[in-house]
Length: 117
Image (cartoon, rainbow, N blue to C red; front, side):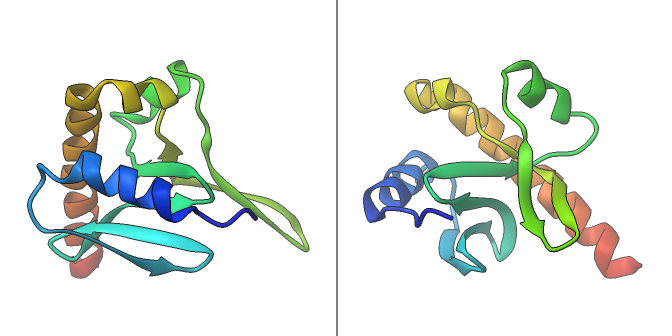
């Protein structure tokens, strides 16, 4: 797995700056990105993944990106909760922020469900 570059992490955080209470920290082999302590994104290598749900997953797929995955001894594991952010959004800051805010809302909703389970 390729390490995330400092420049890539800084670029992502700069794009997310208009959203209040954003923080990033090391998370397994990458970096977790949180809003008000709820993780909604992760950076692995120089790829950004947002939290998705059934209502948003297809738009990522339609843009040609896939879910986060890793391999272990038993094979490939797909983590469908996280989908890669399409590269074109990095050139469209307003759309990037819309997708990020949507991901924050989904992550918060999923976090609330998890805390009541």
